[in-house]
Length: 404
Image (cartoon, rainbow, N blue to C red):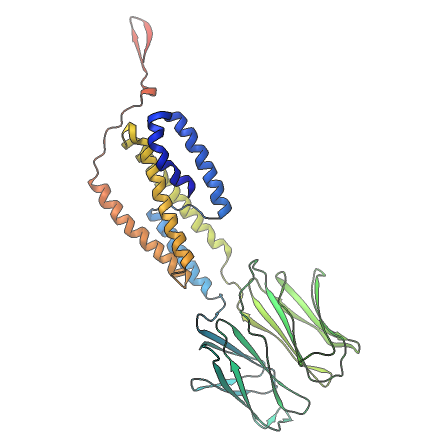
């Protein structure tokens, strides 16, 4: 912004005292410093043109496609709940707002956009048949209370203990934001209902030999142990479980995709791993990064076709004594466009970034209309040659003379 605003105040002095060539030199220095500042601040310069509007429109379309893979995070005064069924049979879930769902074995049910106010608690009823894969439940119905936390997601794991009773474990309320680097994130949730295994370790290893090991202590405050999120490179991995008693789960293969957020759920009962599954908490990226190339191409075309033409207009149509001021006003208009973008992005007027891009595109279209009306009524003036270029060559009586 500095390189655009400073020339406005210095333009008058430049035309009156410094001269044109020194003005160009000083402008170049200021422009260079300003662009370095913009690179550091990562604020790209914007030009207003119909092609730039196309760039914003294409960015909005790409953002709509990206929204399908973005995590469905709860907004203000909202919460979310994930219910994971690790039982060998289906569950009947009765939740708030007259919700009744059948949760298949090994699947996850997501309840989104739950109103979350101060100390808001929801009652969830879990029911199953008395005979669940040859397991006789002492009570086939379980009442669950979940506290809704604003902008957070609870994950509830439905399990079974050694007494053949339905047990429920709730993980800490977190969000499922994707990693900044784009690498997949994975965490491990291990449920142990017996003390027959000691010093259990979960190993995740890829073909290149890189491995991550999660150690599960023998004594924990709860039967549920949850690791922190680990960022791993994209690829195919094998996970296995070991203990002092030996290998308790043979290696199984999983695939971690770019931008995905995963939870590996493991359930132990009577010294045997009865359940293991990788759940997708946030879907991986589905749009190829090469879709950025058309946008860069369109923006580059807008820079060349409109930027160069605008600078030429400022330097040729303005009076000689106001050329620097006109050029400074040109950069000031670009600075104002950047300021509008910064204000809208800073205050987050739009919750959906695609709507933000379409709004910028609409602003550019409106500016095009005003610009077209102004251009139709403008009367171009004849371009006078600069005094520094006013050199005439002519021949007289066989001799070549030069007249300035």
